[in-house]
Length: 423
Image (cartoon, rainbow, N blue to C red):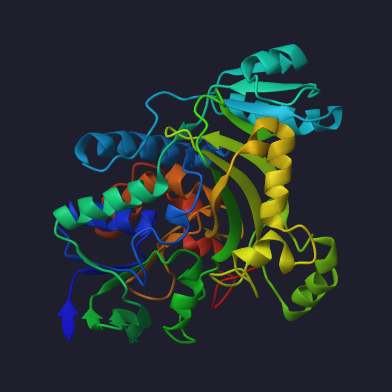
């Protein structure tokens, strides 16, 4: 079977579905190809939290995204569980040594335009009575919106279908087809799709997809950072705000894909018994509308879709020489909010966040290959920036004037010669 479209979008996450919907609304013929199900990756497996970004270059993308989601709520039959007003964020200094991290995060929020209130120990307990006693204080910040990320992604897919996009699920793109330095289409499980433009929105698998085009195609330096989440049974009214331990909300030095070598993997093996392995852990307690509580979080390099050498069972203790990432998330959360210790666990899962070397999205034409466009690398900000990123991508693809400066997101920033750097 051979079919034709103006554009093939590869990836059924929030970015791919959003780009497809935006292009179709402009009269472009689009086929979206997803190797699994819509939102099966990180787009449906994250907290679904929307915060003001710390970096000013991302402010327009975030602002436009939130406005687009509000409009989508009004038009979609799918319940997105989007907050109309922010429940607020409490940053907790667990001990005196946490104050510098808490102050840095509060200052960044203030620079981004959020109202910030410093809390002493008594004010902290008044703001969030479920917290354990003894914390020296923190900050109450007017920021943070919750949305169901899987529902949001599905709503974009439905918008795309309504605009005429063909959505192929359970179909893997095996190869990007090139000829004379230009895109000719893709080869998939279901046959060949011919198209002069391919949008690579394959998330953490974007680099692997580009490699199918052959050695002459520049690399796309998008790697994966895994995050684990834990879901409890419902206990309505336990939490008044989103609650996070200091040093996690805007953590400096968060893991980036960078270059993972044989030597670095060997070094990680020697530290496996300590449970470090390049992993960052913090506490994020999020009570959702249905009363269930989502607990996070973690960040660690990911080389595969599933945790290396293990499933959830190993992640909870048997496979990494320690209590395991899920156990540590639970321990930290219960120390922060003791009442969580009595709640049953209804699920645990991880998602691999597609992350660029500088933690900015990569949105634009791939240098040296006519017709190949990339949209990805958002890290943990896929929901925060997804709608705006999709609109920016569509504007660049059809030649419209972009609503924000695309230069910070240009793939060309990684060009160091004939290929792209991944350091």
